[in-house]
Each structure stands twice: as C-alpha cells, then as structure tokens.
Image (cartoon, rainbow, N blue to C red; front, side, top):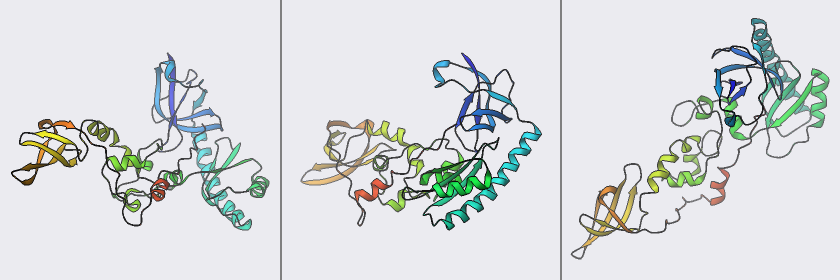
Length: 300
C-alpha cells in the first residue's frame, strides 16, 4: 500500500496521483506539485489515502506543499499573463501567415514554460513563430497541435440536448466513440444527427453502450426464426431497450404482426445482421470521419 493524493489541473480534468510527501491535504485544497511540465498548482480531488501499489502505473512525483495565498496570487497572475500572450501569439500567427487556429495558452506555475495549443488541418512549420515568442517571453515555448474534441473541451459549449457538453461538464477522458455504437443503438446514420459541437460522434453514445451490448447479446436479429405463444414466426423489428420483438406469423394464408416480450419467445434460428442502409447523400467515408479527432494532450 502507498499513500497518495489525487490532483486535477482543470475544472473537469483527469485526476493524477502524487506522493503527499508527509503533508496532509484536504479535498478542495490547492496543492503545489512537481510534474513533467514543471512545478504546477492544482486542486486536490482526492485527499490523503492508501492505495494498492498495483493500481499505481508509475512512480509518483512528490507534492511540495499546500498552496499559500501567495501561490494562489501567482496562479491568478499567470492566467492574466497567458491571456496577454494569447493576443500576442495571434498577431504573430497573422504576421507569419500560418494556417492555424490558436485555442488556448497556459503558463506553468513556475513560469518555466509557456504552452500554446492550436488546431490545424495540416502540419505547420512554426519555427519562426517560436523564435518570435521566445524573444518576447524569455522562457521555454511549446506549441501543441490538438484535435477538434480537445478544442471544444477547452472552449466549452452546449449540446443539442440543451445541456452543457459532456466533455466540459463531467468527462475527464475523451474515450473513442465508434460508428458501431450508433448502429447498435439504432440511431440515424446521418452525420448531422449523431455528431456533437466538435463535428465528431457525440460522446454520450458511449454512456449507454454497455446496456445495448448486454441486451443485444440476448436479442435475436431481424429475420430470425422464433417460436412464440401463437406459433412460429420471423422477427420483423426489435425494440432493444424494452426487449420487445415484433414477429410476423403466417396463419390461415394471412400474415399477422404481433409484439412479444423476449422472455415469451424462443429463438430457433438467428439471422445475420443486415447492413444498415445509409441515408441519401451519406457515404461510409463521411461516417468514418466522425470517429477521428482523438489527440491526447495529457503529459502531467
């Protein structure tokens, strides 16, 4: 067992574990810790507790102290300086005619590094830009290209549901979302209906995926031969969440359609799942593009 604290560096960010170094931290405290980026200030999300060492991936860096009022003042000043650096960098980008969009700027707590986050459709030669910025700020300059998901997480916004975006509100990790999830959940394969503000698949598709996978493992596909209380028939429709099957039954030279709960049906022969029909004007390439955009920026 090893004593740890958990610290996050953004409002809705990943929690990183640190060695408390014999210091008592309370949840909500600001802490000064050593990271790969330098000395940083973060919020304690997990107070001192013991953790099995097999759950700790790498050796822990040490916490330095509970943040003092002076530390908090420095942090606020760094935020203001970062805002000013944002404006200067935009001017330099325009000067060098670089096809890139600046998203955010961060100072490390000890001002040993100034980080600029940007998006671009292609690789950018920003060597001259870095020289200009280094000459102005006299510190280590780092430019990082991020994905569209990271961009929206940084900028914030609201989804089509009217609520704050999941990536802004509660998602600490941007896990991959696949077209397979949309298909298994029976959603329209129209990109405008299943993509979020970032132009990629909505993160909320992943929220219910485990439920759909569990239910689909027990449900028959459309076209399966089943036995019902009213005779043998063919599955015509499947309501996944309610586990209701619509079955076509041939009776006295007529075809009837009737709904049955899964528990009242015996699957005699399952069928292969048919390929989903794409909406007019939508291609597989369009759908594949919705899965792109996962560029991790974590390096604490």
